[in-house]
Image 1 (cartoon, rainbow, N blue to C red):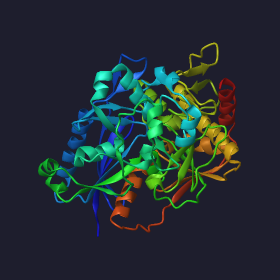
Image 2: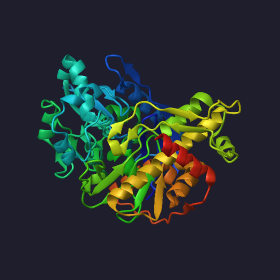
Image 3: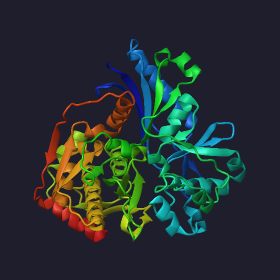
Image 4: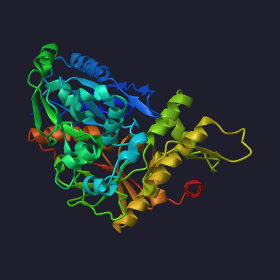
Length: 472
């Protein structure tokens, strides 16, 4: 029986709503850019208005359902960017969103005691990136507003909240909060106390594939095609991107998107005595994911192109990259120095002096691609050094790998085959379809085709990596 799903993928830069069949066929997509507002009461505070995103989600529903008026939707599910949360007050009103790029907690890091214990319990070092510090930062500046706060949830489960009224969170998102013990697979009162958030309630934990129930009556009234729909819990975009892939337990995976997580899966949590690696929960808390991450990567490329190369297509850029013969610009724009456990909020370009009149924005775009590839390869080397294992291949996911330059550069610099399975460019969406299919006990036995990039000795890439390393 063919079923139909609506998937909601709330990323950092944009949100994508897609109508899928249970066979993974995309019928229609509606996208919009997420809007953030600066909070001037912090050095680096950003927030979003949940009501604005909610209205646009419903606009997407309206457009998609109008295009397919005879289709009844069986399930709705959602993925969300990690480390982004929505605060919910005591009247069950979602009143402010704190995105992953909000750093309002940075000024209060010195208040956190016993960071070693926090790492042991959460698998992550104390940093302003995680929701616990965002909430503490909010409490410090807005004590009266904080008093009305009851709980929080992730972006993915917030979509379930606006559709069903149920407050929930999936383990793949809960582990990002630094209020969740990855070993006990539950929220931890002791962690809450370390962040002075004792009066904050924890959301209820639901597993990916579980139903939050039927949609609100007013939503079914507005959208009759959703009359029999259930909301199916999704989870973190990273974990969903690798969902449904039949890979060996400790294989090496890279997701090239806004950031570039480098991951391996395991049944037990990896013990890092130096407390550098991030240890995450997998979907449904069925295992663990070890991660390194150079931070902002694809976001730099996207933002640069929109600002300076708006009328140039991505394919035209790829053709231009093929003509480059020497390194004239090197970028350093990634936002995490993982080995030092530090966030980097500044970066820039290194240019040969004297400044060449032949440089154009496309050259800088190539430098950003080189920065992405180099930072990924550096972190792969760091991860393999920690694990004591060299992997023969990389499995790639995410829209970044639509760039053949990035794909070949990663393969060549890492000296590994890069395997791109069919559907990998929209990995998170395919993961959501897989979650819905598992809820309805649908098995997809279709064999996936793969594209493989093999390492090549390309001097331009090697020279770029050498200069990039010198500046890093």
